[in-house]
Image (cartoon, rainbow, N blue to C red; front, side, top):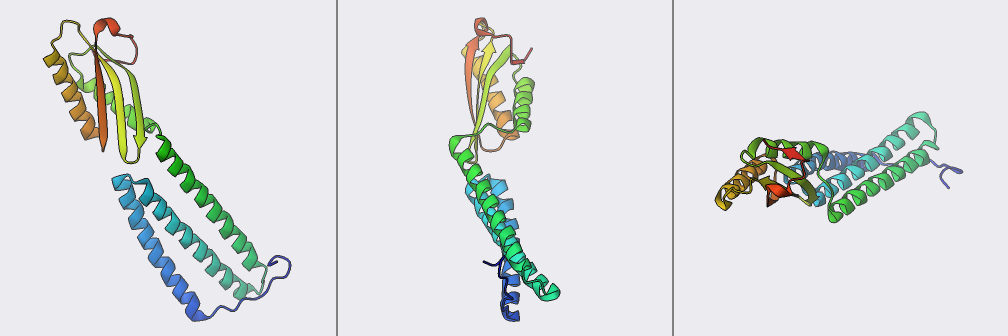
Length: 198
């Protein structure tokens, strides 16, 4: 109805100032929450931060709309900005849902992280022949890494275990909150693909 019969709104100055103050506080809190969410890699905290930013944008839109209506005298600006705010809320909600579903379903690590993982394996698996079938996934803040490490058939279990420990230790330094599973295989299982160590 606002588009077809726009009306001037009654916006007391005290209410506008209160809304503006709350918006500033929400903005500051949202930035702090988002930084902490990235640090601990928490999808739930990131969703809370985005919810706060949606509130900030919504309130800012309302305030801008009221100011523009008063300044220009065009009452139709109020419902137009309200429509924009509604679309922003829907878009933000979709983004939160998409990220939440991705976290629940386990998503692959970003390409940059996978590149780091491959470099760490190649640079720290001295004595092994090959690493293949590298699989990664993220669930919440955890990153899971699984791969097959091919070693010479005559290598002792102790030596193969030491290589695995060395690679795992370096992966833990390079990738936060990581769970590593290494399957050791003899050289006749080599696929001659993946990461060639020697």
